[in-house]
Amino acid sequence: AGSGEVLVRVQAFSICTVDRGALRGRAHLLRSLLYRGYVTVGRGFAGVVLDVGQGVTDLEMGDEVWGCVSEWCGGAATELLTIRSTRVSKRPRGLAADTAASLPWAGGEALIALRNIAYTPDNCKGKRVAVCGAASGEGCALVQLLSSWGVHVTVVAPRHAALTLKDLGASDFVDIEGNRESGAWSSLEARARRTGPWDAVLACAAAEVPPIALANKPALLKATASRTAFVDLRPGPLITDRLPTPFAIIFATSFYTFRVLRWLVGCGSNTDWLEDRFRLREGLEALAKLVERGTMAPILDKVYLPQEFESALAHACSDDAIGTTVIRFP
Image 1 (cartoon, rainbow, N blue to C red):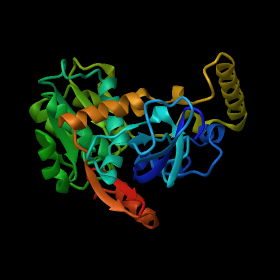
Image 2: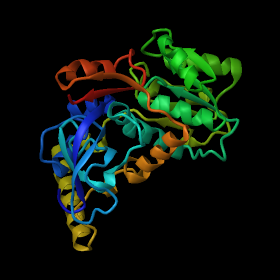
Image 3: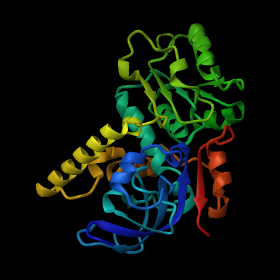
């Protein structure tokens, strides 16, 4: 392991719709500027530290850890992963690798969503929040957190997920009735007309959530809700993915220049500045505390082997998934 890095033997990694987006070319320009390897999958992972680089003082060989890998820096689908120590932390004690791998990415997405709507345990008790696509990994994490904070949570998901989501703390369940195109939003609008709009609406990355353009936001949100009260967590195309060739060249040149300037002023060549803090150690440690306090539990859906990757990805991106799909190394 290099300076500031750790070498991890990956035991299991999660897959989700972000991986499908990466395989279809999402973030391809950023990836070409930051990463020289093949496109790999696996956003969250769990494993054991095999080696620590110079300057790493909070981890040592043999530590059981978990972490996140951004979509523009490869993935965790490798048995030996060299990664910056800032993207790894010790996982909660007693948590098996399969279970642990299901939470870092999904839990980080949930924390990011709650930060975007400025919700904390102290200011959201009694509010009404709708979680669309609640059967996804981040949806399950959001339901647990919000319900523990005293929020009235309405979930939108396939019928077979109703019991699980209610066990996690959901107050109301809205069945999408199999209408993939507009069922989620039309069902929510019908519920809003009967029971009133919500303080916030969160759209998670689940197969049954229709395009955001179909949502009638004024009908779903209270008049007092802020502009940031409608949060879309689904991985859409980046602006850099759509740049014509001349503008892509200008962007690449500017990006390289910025990285050189950061290196010259002593900030190093790492790309932590591109990451949300909840996908770095701060978020991982926050998730560990939530798990240890019993506020949040990883929701592991199915476990596959590496040779079953195609089936695993298809399942993770389907209506059948409840929670996070994980691939385990034998």
